[in-house]
Amino acid sequence: MRYTQKDICRAFDIKRDTLRHYERLGIIEPEVDSSNGYRYYDDWQINLLWDAKRYQSMGFSLAEVHDILHGDSLSDVQARVSGRLDRLREEQVYLERRISLISSYSMRLNSIEERLDRYVTEEMPALRFVPRCEVHELMLSDSLAASGAFANANLALSIPCAHFPSMDGELYYWGFAMLEEWYDHMGGPEEGSVSIPAGSALLTCVDAGERWGFGRHLFDGLVAEAERLGRKPLGMLCGYLLTRTYDEDGRYHRYVEAVLPLEE
Image (cartoon, rainbow, N blue to C red; front, side, top):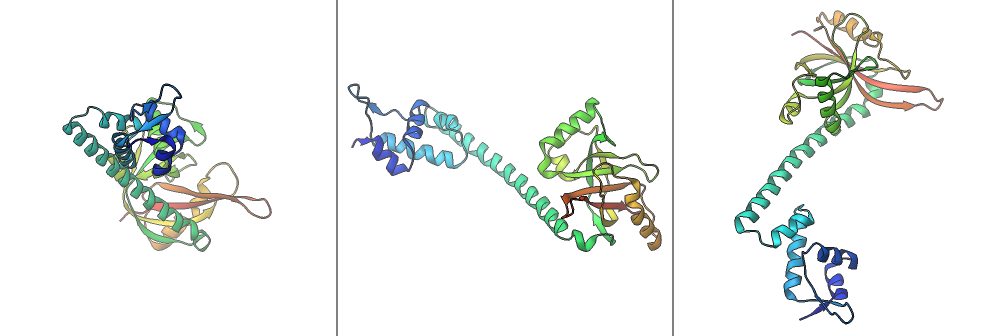
């Protein structure tokens, strides 16, 4: 049988322009009536369209679909499908990590008010901190630029973080923190990043208020609480930016989860 464009568009629920696009890519080759330009499709073209739609549903591009349908050997098709399966599995792992991070973020975001200036001890996972700037001075060394580019490419798996490498002074670094196992799995650069070891930590939420800076004073309450508990700080402080808001009076707020690692 021969079918018109209208028949095919109705059967496959596609637009005429889409059908013509398949033709331009060489996925299908309808019979063209030279007298009026009408296109007709036989059963073979319909089969090709069904196959094309199936491969598209697996995530193949139309260019890849063309190669699969025209001239690939069985081993080539097997390799292409296996490769696509491997990519989807990688995407699934990435998606699961994003879900985990967003789930944790949602839980912490929803509990900000009840955790403000209250203290709790938690076991924290190992993190990799990727600095972007020292205080507010952008760092441009090659190793830091590579780490920064990696952080930018994987922001969905990162947490905005202010990191104080020592308990003394006001110096801090601004950047992104990521679970170390994720960082290593995705091949983040070794140079330009800082490992924050897993272990016990004292946490609280604070309102950082004004727009600029994360003054060391934000963490005074944590240090005092650690002393009260008789726990010794490890000598580093972290602040994870949870969100920024304005209140009804127009005042600016930055809610930060402040973390003080403790010696065991």
